[in-house]
Image (cartoon, helix red, strand yellow):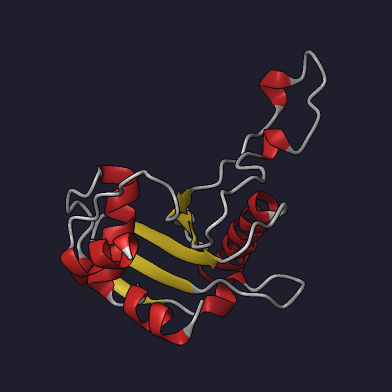
Length: 166
């Protein structure tokens, strides 16, 4: 992600509008005033990569971590990478801050390439699940926003909508 995009998307209003677009069809359910910066190294994995933007959301009732990962090319391992990022963050959170629960972690991948995403969006698309094991398989789904499609995401926030439309 380039520096200007990261700066823009890291602004609380822009950041929550992406998640409101994905989860709540643009309705302003998540509020920017509850966002706090989080150290992106919390999700640094064994290959020393870290996510583009991570924020902590604390509204007095919930503590959540929201992550934006920008992707400019198709990565066949993206579903597993995001799963790894989230797992590493949970483990580090447990080791550092464990009380009773770990925060919910929700990652959105913003795909900004002109070509269509043609890699797995679910873990089950990468693995062969033997008959009889379906109920035991732990599915993982990639939250992917493809900005190159005809799908119009409603962000509920003018500047972010213009960014998406661009």
